[in-house]
Length: 449
Image (cartoon, rainbow, N blue to C red; front, side, top):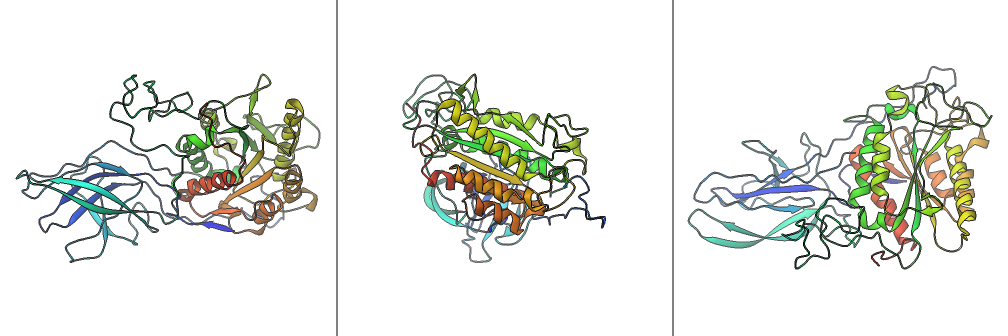
């Protein structure tokens, strides 16, 4: 299993709000972070009957605030945006530390690196260098190399925006250093808010078709640190749709939810479910409309998911986890689309499934856990693999470190599941899966034509 612990992000988002030199000339750095601590998973309730009691993202955001310092002779201010940062105490009087300053605060608190604070532990680090200019009250200006750090596992590629846009970006005119400027914040059109051309044009080869399959069982309403499992999933998956615009614009995205199927008869609904699940599944967003592929609908996927209410409106029982039915439905959908567009599984476009689940799979009617064997979703993952479709598995909640999740991933051709121990590791899991898919070579390199 791939274990993704808190803090092990492929990318994080923190804001360096200010720098100040204290009287002893040591450098203090202010951070804003919303990471959250680990919370233990909760098991399914067990009444001893052997039956399932039917119910079987924290993302960091950049802000624009700047910490102001007092008018001391040695006081200086600077502002820059980084992914994650820590600084060394240069006075030699104490351990390496991180200072946090919330917007509107009048002071700050210092926490030694490696220890927990009320926003969670800061762990893995990788070095980067930032040039910082400090201007003191006596008009003396000095420039120094300040070492900052980010996660050891951070990787950078062309799949993310370049960071801060040029100074004139957003004024509707193409200024030096800009590829375009349409004066809006929409990532789904031809020009990004960073004044770079989007990847919504024509690609050198067909876009990959990614299907995000979301567990909609009522166990998703279990509390998970801040919020529920479902709320954390929605927040992180929605954020992914805008934090990885280049890669997702070079793919076509679709969304499916699944629960259980109360009856083998076709057209069966789940009692008290108002979200349209029929026969155990609902394709909420397809790759196509009017027999044409719809490109750059990642933001639409985020909006669609955000608008869906929690399973059974927050109840902890009522919807099971018929995972096999979801994977079977995915295969049927893909085969139908291939036939419609005359596609061949040996050639692009290629399809990938991302299964996101918080618990053990159930029987079709949702009453038994991990049985009967003919409802084992690993067999369906193997069928997808035989059809040229890999299945990636993200497991959290009650599914963490359980063999069944690895079994599905192995049968689906991706080796092992990505185990997520806490909400702040969800984004890293999504990014890891996207990286694996890109490494497969199924996503075109550019779609700016």
